[in-house]
Image (cartoon, rainbow, N blue to C red; front, side, top):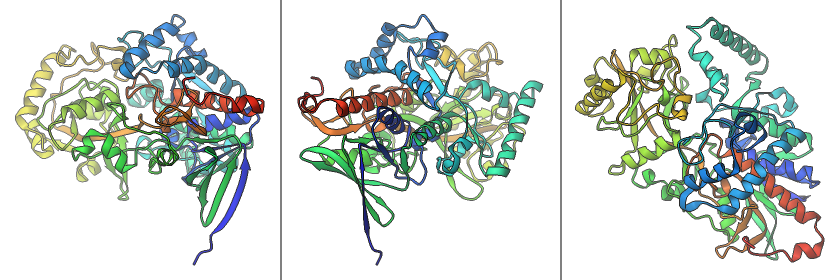
Amino acid sequence: MEKTMSQTLEVDLVVVGSGAAGLATAITARKRGLNVVVLEKEAVFGGTTALSGGVLWIPLGPHGRQQNPADSRQAVREYLMAETGAYFDEAAVETFLDNGPKMIEFFERETSMKFVPTLYPDYHPYAPGGVDIGRSILAAPFDIRGLGKDMPRLKPPLKTITFIGMMFNSSNADLKHFFQATKSLTSFIYVAKRLATHIKELALYRRGINVTSGNALAARLAKSALDLGIAILTDTPVTEIVMTDGRASGVKARQGATTLTVNARHGVVLACGGFPHDLKRITAAYPHLARGGEHLSPTPKGNTGDGLAMAEAVGAVADIRFKDSAAWMPVSRVVFANGEEGVFPHLLDRYKPGIIGVLRNGRRFTNESNSYHDVGAAMIRACEGGKETAMWLVCDKPTLAKYGIGFVKPAPMPIGRFLRNGYLIKGNTLDELARKAGIDPAGLESTIREYNVGADQGKDPAFGRGSTSFNRYLADPENTPNPCVAPIRKGPFFAVKVIMGDLGTFDGIRTSARGEVLRSDDSVIDGLYAVGNDRASMMGGNYPGAGITHGPNMTFGYVTANHIADLATAPVHARSSRAVLAGA
């Protein structure tokens, strides 16, 4: 029988989780003089962040002000009021607007974190206060050799969105070169150089070292933490919050056969990534699961709601309030050559001209060029009457060759494997495609016929594709007059089945604007804090723009850490007399 050992650590602050929110909290607290340790359940650090696009929505930040100097606090507030509706949280919004730009300036000045502007519009630029540019920024690419011996501990990017392990930048400009490689000499040279560099990296390091997107965000934050002497203990799942006299005073965790007790003088911060793999909780929260449908999340399998469960065990509230409990992402199931399964998030193909989405009845149901969350929400509502929540993305041969679809790459990449394993469905006629896919043939033929009438003129009278700057941003600007719309006419025809997934959860632990965890009466659980996706989102279950997870998550991590540090350095009498109500 294996002998269980015990070990105790004494620190000022313990952070549970190593994604952007947790690391931002740890770094800020360390910069304020606190001794911090980060505990990570998985064998690698980076959490959901390392798999993400690495974009932050930070209105009125230093980069955005250069792009859109006319943007204003009033406009951002108006936009958030329109987007969050009944869930508008004034205290959280004001705290976010006060601190978002400060957070960016702090991290760029004090750490290895660097950001670059993007051209992303808000997802609803037509809404009151919405803008066409200036609120989303991106983590700058990073050479992960800067992590030194800790490089192997960085979570690799999502396999389904890399090409032979090579990452694409979330910037649309980077991707355009890959789509244009066979048509433009400039793009061909760009892609050739990228491929040559990547192949050399694989030979030397067995992974790409020049990372982008969320992998760059996670790597830069991890380097910043490690450079400050913050220990990131991986393979260390936390099992319990330790309470002493009604106050969170530390945690218990496991390290193999060792029970680890971490005593934290100034508190515990939960940053465990929400609950996308907590089957009981998501079945209650996700309508398509409740009625028997499928759900595939590309988020880390370790995000099983540990933070919520541990917080509830000591009196916190983590209820399901929002109409949409998660950031919906249409996904497809991918089977790799070795039999391993993956999840492909449909981030780009839906925007391309000549690709439409239909239900089993063969009918379109939404503007396919809207955001992933909006398309996912529309899919859930459209399938309300049945057990299955699914759509099929449909295109013709020229469109497949030009853009690819789902995990299937554009020409000249071969498609045979995907036809053989059933991922890609092919029909010489629309009738044959529909019958193979299980779609109503008459419905599909009628839909394509109606769609083509408008598409021949670059119009989509049914759903208005291409009518917003966001629709057009990820489309094909060379397809005129509408970068989102082209007819579907030249067989054979192809389809990929798409089901529901998510990028992370929106519902979570109820907190104050500063991140203090609350009981049902809104009193504070002293010493306990929640950040990131463990904390209920200030967006109220909506998705207003690129980076509305990382932007607020890093900002509130910064706010929470500063609040903890302020309490730690305050006189004892001031600490003991602070208000117990979050709103006080």
